[in-house]
Image 1 (tube, rainbow, N blue to C red):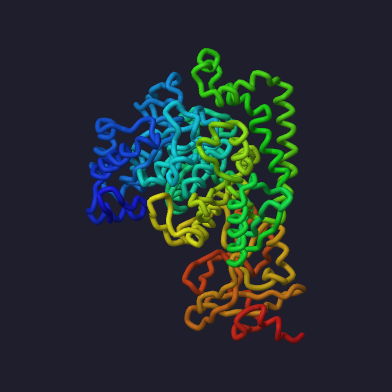
Image 2 (tube, helix red, strand yellow):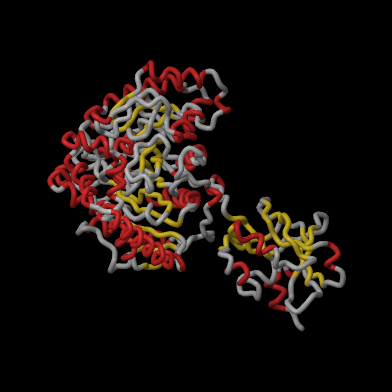
Length: 602
């Protein structure tokens, strides 16, 4: 599997190494702690767990069957504004530190699933920054170039994954802190929809907009973490159930949007500009439809987070501490949060009205696209550049990230290659809340087309595996007749937001008839395993919330049942009750409704 310090920490690979007896969690954690200590100059960690602190986690794993826990023995790192029981939480401010008795809900879920915490990661103080330079524990350095910023505020969380110190890590993402470091360190950065991962036990930045994020080497690993961690929490008033969200359905290839040439910015970075458009050209080659969209409404919304009343939430989060300890805070962080003192209740209402307007304006932009793609950042800066102009350059980095939570989007940062100067670069995909799994599936499909490896230690990108990703919000629906594309009842699918997934055939187990009922010609599909044939069908993704109203439109003798496709899978589809074929014309030999209608004579 590996040499002493270079091992494959992808979840599936590590799971296999355990099963093959190549490694044990205890051996792995000893090696990881040793390796983490060798990167002391990178300032990745605020606290590495000691042998004594690791022992309860290891003992628990050794006492149970590896197959009994989905993340058995998987090492992870926790941003130091997220509680781990018995270990100080500092939010990168020593004077603020406290020792929690209980872990954050999201951490406890992962530990209960068998994951092992390695340490607490460095970060921009109080999660205020996108840079990784605003910490009294030292600047966290980029995994590829020591002189470049790592991105923030979840800096140590990203660098720990990139340097092969853990399989995944937790960050937080209010304004881009889970995406910017992913882009700068060649990682997948998942920013889930607000409320899907509990924020109980997380030091707030902007309480109403905070999200716990996931850094991973590939989309499948991010998905496994999401499966465990995305649980509703009755003790978190901002928690939401995933199935309460109603995202739009996507077709087989979602329609992609990009910012129009008039509204896109690269801060003068020609390398970044060329790489973004090269990436878009590659997507077009793969058959994706790409549309330019006016990005200005999103850019205007982004300004609300730091230039509007939401700064006051940062102040509320640490008000008592700040009033007595402002002098010990990072100067940039203190200056940003102190700006809240100038705000009034009137400003809060003005911000609320502006956001309501932005939500209405941007909602209309989704009529023609399924998913929006942007550069994750316009550019990247050196540590020296950032220290010389910390506020302005930080603002530039948030160009494509600050608006996401205000407008309730799910987002994912994905690597797309390397610049001429050797630094990683990537794009971010985002869509309305609840599309988390769709974004991960799309990233899984695309990731390997752009880069062969993840992180900074040449870990191979996992081969795509579309079946790995479930979509609980849509039901695959097979149609065989008047609901096919271009036929009279297809509008009943379109008006419910259904999207075409594929044109395929049934298993060779069906007979096909033209029913005698009028005025609309329609067929009947009847299963006959002994003397059936394959019939052409279209499979559509139907949003679950609209399936009931669609079912109400289906007249007897037709109905919905299970239809077996030629690849052996079963989907919901149109079937006909046997009595319905009395007096019907057999058209099985035509292979499908479209073929029959092309030759049918009145």
